[in-house]
Image (tube, rainbow, N blue to C red; front, side):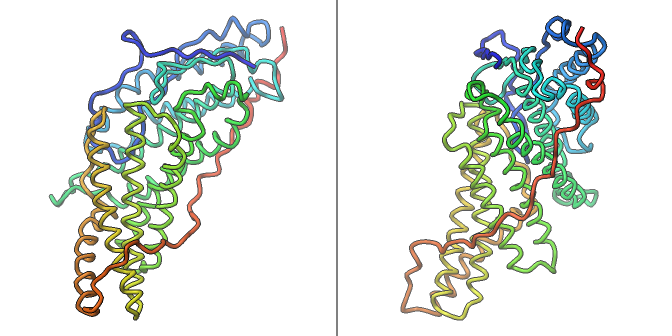
Length: 414
C-alpha cells in the first residue's frame, strides 16, 4: 500500500519562507515543490528503458523548474502587474500537463507499479518540512495541487491594480478581471478533480498522513476561494453595469457568502499552524466578512423598497449588519497582513471600493430616515434578517485526468 515519511523542519531544511510578500489580491501559500527521487533503479526490472528514462526526464524537468519558480513567485507579487503571468509559471504548468499522462501509467488498470516509487514534496502549510510517500496517487494529487496554485499566482498578478495612463488611482482592467475568472475556474477544476477522483484513490492509512496542504478540507477551501473570488469579480462588474438590478447584485453577494462560508467550514476543524496556515484562515475570515457586508447591504436596500414599518426596520437592521461586517473585515484584513509572512492589501477596487463608501453612508441615512418616519419606535431590530438562500451558479471547469500516454500501451516487462 506504500509507505510514508514526514520530515520535520530544521535549520538546514530546503523550505524557504519569505518575510514579506507585498501586495496580495489572491491568497496562496508558497509552492509545494517536488524533490528529486530515484526512478530508474526501482522500475528497471518492470518497464522498458525508454519509458523509464522519459518518466524520469519529465519529472526532473519539473523539479528544476519548480525550484527556480518558487523563490520568484513571492517577489513577483511585489512588482507592479505589468506582465500577464510570466512565462516561467506558464512553462511549469505546461510541464506538469506533459508529465501527467506518463505518470498515470503507474496507476493504469490497478498496476502493481503504483507503490514502486517514493515521491517527495516540500510542504508549505504543514509543520513538516517535507512528505514522502510510496504511492503514485500522492504524486498525482501533488501535481494537481501545484497546477491550481500556479493558477492562483497568475490570477493574483492580474488582479494587482495598476496605475492607469490617465494618472488616476490604480485600477484593474475589465480584461484582467474577466481573464481572472477563467483562471480561477480552471484552478477550481483541478481541485475538484483532486477531491473527487484522486484523493479517494489514496488508501485510508496513507490519507491520514497527508500534509495539511493536501487534506480534503484545505483543497475544498481553495476550491471555494476560487469560486468566491470569481463571484466577487462578477459583482464588481454588475456594480459597474447600469443594467444590473439590485436583485442580481444581492444574489451574487449571497452566493459569495455561501462560497466563503463553505471555505471557512472546510478548515474550521483543521490544526493550521502559524505562518501560511494561520494566514490562510485569516484570509478566508476576511473575505467571508466582506461577502456578508455586501449581501446584507443589498438585502437591506431591497427590504427598504417595502412600504411597511416592519420592512423598513428590517432594512435598517440589515444595513447596520453590513456596516458591522465591513468593520470586522477591515480588522481581519489587518490581522492577515500582520501575520508572517507580512503582506499589504491592494488599493481598493471593484465591489469593495464601491461598498466601503456606500455602506456607512447608506446605513446612517436609513437609520435617520427610519427614526423620522417612526418617531414613536426608535428601537432597531436586535438581529439582522436572514439572508436569502441561493445556490451557487458558478461551477468549476470540468477538468478530467488525461488519458494514459500511448507509450504505456507498448510497455513490456523485461
